[in-house]
Amino acid sequence: MPLPLLLPALAGLAFLLLPLLALLVRAPWRSLPEQLTSAQVWEALRLSLVCATAATALSLVIGVPLAWLLARADFPGRGLVRALVTLPLVLPPVVGGVALLLALGRNGVVGQWLDTWFGITLPFTTAGVILAETFVAMPFLVISVEGTLRAADPRYEEAATTLGASRFTAFRRVTLPLIMPGIAAGSVLAWARALGEFGATITFAGNFPGRTQTMPLAVYLALQNDPAAAIALSLVLLAVSIAVLAGLRDRWMTTS
Amino acid sequence: MTRSVRRIRRTGWTGRSLRTRRSLLSLRAPLRALGAGAAALLVLSGCSSSDTGSDAAKSGSSANPSGTVTVFAAASLQESFTTLGKEFEKQHPGTKVTFSFAGSDSLAASITGGAPADVFAAASPTTMALVTDEKDAVGTPATFVRNQLEIATLPGNPDKVSSLKDLTRSGLKVVLCDKTVPCGSAAEKALQASNLRLTPVSYEQDVKSALTKVELKEADAAVVYKTDVQAAGDKVEGVAFPESAKAINDYPIALLKNAPNPGAAKAFIELVRSAQGQKVLTGAGFLTP
Picture 1: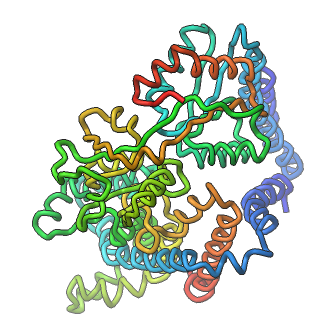
Picture 2 (picture 1 turned 180 degrees about the horizontal axis):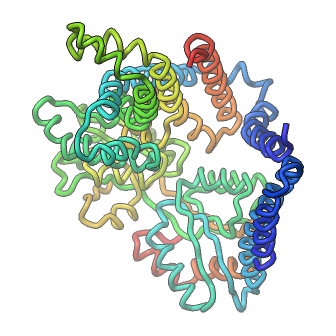
Picture 3 (picture 1 turned 180 degrees about the vertical axis):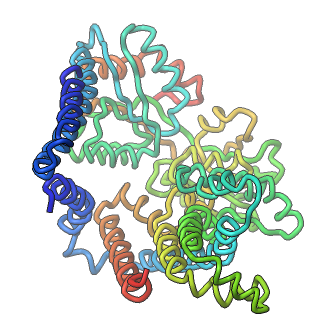
């Protein structure tokens, strides 16, 4: 084990774990049962889980085909499109929220037509939370799936089509099972990112308990006047994240 | 900085020479990496030491302030304090005023968490108490202005909002500040005083976020401060309501205990409380204490 690798590696590990340890050390263990039985905590947690799952589902429906397009279709400007798809990864989430408001808000570029034609307004609704989370989380899924697609041998699909399968059947029966580990890994990443989403959500969907107040928003607002409650909420979010990531890792991600 | 450059050159040289002596490579390579790491650290510390150099120049007395003053101020003070900051820099050449504008509660949390600020100007005594309770302020905070609530509606008031009660109409999208922020607790006080129940579409994290939702026409109305309505110009229309008299906020200002630049900080507080400062603040719509 070379020392110049081992020491920074241990420092890196300590750096990542120390804040989480501090959370445990300073947790108000005595008042914790009381903190965690409040209805607001469970409302926020339920909303977080529902929205993160819905955002992941939406990402799968539109993200996997997008990844396929980027990996398999040859069109001019593909590099640029790929860069644009990954933009939400580097964009500050609050900027994403503002952009969503300008696009899908009641007075937005597209949003005003949604409002006049269908009577749909997205800001301040749970659907708005799901959209904000999808916007931020989907690139993780697209990147992961696209990478797996590139590594997968296209000759399997070609063989399937020469044997009479349509392109779509080949995708469904051959490509999709082939890239399942990538899809699973990407979904977990996207779900985790959606669960922790704060900036885009509070900007686009606002903050209302039970409707748009997810756990990160509840933690942020609790921190202002009741730090003990904020720590308790953080612990719940931490426990949920660890449980889900560990659970999924055992089931799907060991093969990847 | 020159030392670190020399270090990089030297490690570069040993690196090249080592390639001829492969047997030693496994032993020396870690050392080489350490050398490069140390060089990087030297570069980093070199950069930060230039900052501490300017820090040393910051110490100044109230009579002759110099250096940077860091002011944490309530979001509603943004326009008037920015004006006062420029005035301060003009009056005291060589000074720089940097602001952090946010919800008072969030600023208070940063200060008690150890943020390096000189001055805290809060939008309510309650949020100031979060700081004084932790003994993070020097002396007793002084009230320097007061602020009254107003309803901000879309330009031209298309929904014909004329009272606080009108905001409870169904179908009207109203945003309030969160109860943890002064404008939120004031709005709640006003609503309670008039026995009204209002379900907003969102509780925003500070007064400016609430106002922005109306400016962007995402919400039909917001309960914000008179000063915010005035600062927004013709992007919103203000509607005064009598119940706001029951929820007037006192704005306290205080010098912070761990102020990096207490001298200049005191001078800034003096400017805010001076006749000139009060003129700027009342011009922005604040009430005198």
